[in-house]
Image 1 (cartoon, rainbow, N blue to C red):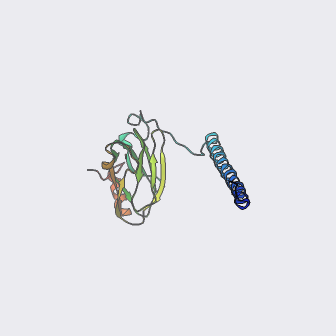
Image 2 (image 1 turned 90 degrees about the vertical axis):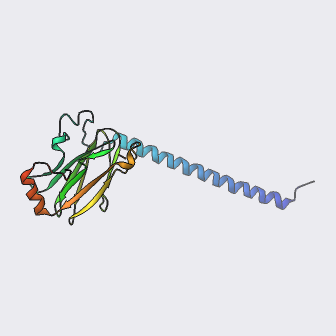
Image 3 (image 1 turned 180 degrees about the horizontal axis):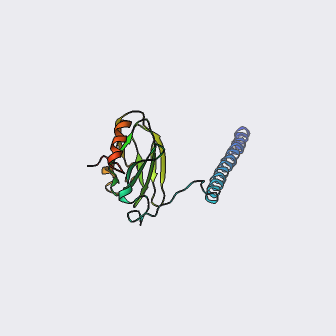
Length: 187
Ligand code: CUA
């Protein structure tokens, strides 16, 4: 039994098309692998312009993240710096107090594994990586309470790792700073 001429011609055409598509898809894969390789090597060889480090093993012993320095500090220029650490399975301070309508900078790091820092209702959403300081600027519009969950899986207690940010009136905050150098709303 012989094949019909028509049939074999269309089969040859189909093989040709298939080959072209196979070649195209190999080229696409090649280009993507090349791009990923280039970007990876480029980023590894070009360090970020701005990286701050903090040794997680000595956080509690010295430096800006010792316990007595955690919380909100009023700076001479009127802005506020919040220093916090994440550890399995809590934030210190557990409750952060900041003034409304004021430039606020969060400086946070991790004492153990990778944690997340998310402030509900804001665009603050970052990772706390041991060894590095996460720096985030924000300005809260009005007094309110925001929940601050850890949004990076960090172990069995991850679900229970929550903090809170309490935004208070600017004047009220200033009055609080008269009595204490570092403020939190943990009692
Ligand atoms: Cu800390 Cu999840």
